[in-house]
Length: 218
Image (spheres, rainbow, N blue to C red):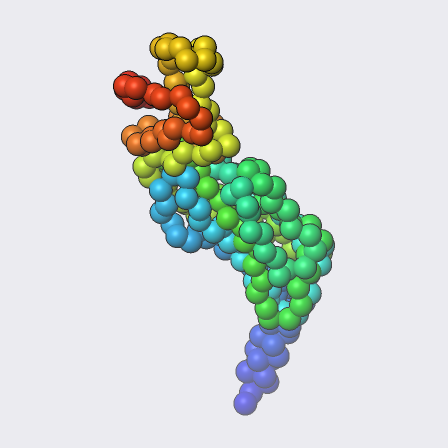
């Protein structure tokens, strides 16, 4: 090998070494977080699982990992969020809240971890989550995004639906005409249509006769 060839090989090795030293992001640290929904399509009022996956590439060992994933309007955490976190630190997702967050997370080695929560929506549409910044002690990648498709009408919820009667009482042994109004709403308060409601007569001696219904469509 000539001196020129030897010099070229040495120069190439030196350049590779310098690149390794000045550009650690090329060979380590957190990758862009992956956002996903499972399933990707639900009916209104049903639940899907939102997953944020973090992937660490050594030699970096990031700590102080934090992010906040804010949801678009009408997408919320389920009433029972079912929050899970194996990334360390503290994950937060309030019941019927509009975000999922992590603070103080940490990772080491060539590993992945996830933060998950159940989400739902009362209104049909496409809901995208992602594009949020993840901060850490090593680098600050931006998350990808995923879309949840919500179809159909939401189911009724006993906690927000109401039943009222006017008048609310009748004289003993008397006969009167009363209007019973049922307002069927989803858990987030939006009107629900296209459902069948059956009213049962409670305890007591009163008799509802004849029973007639005049449904109102929203």
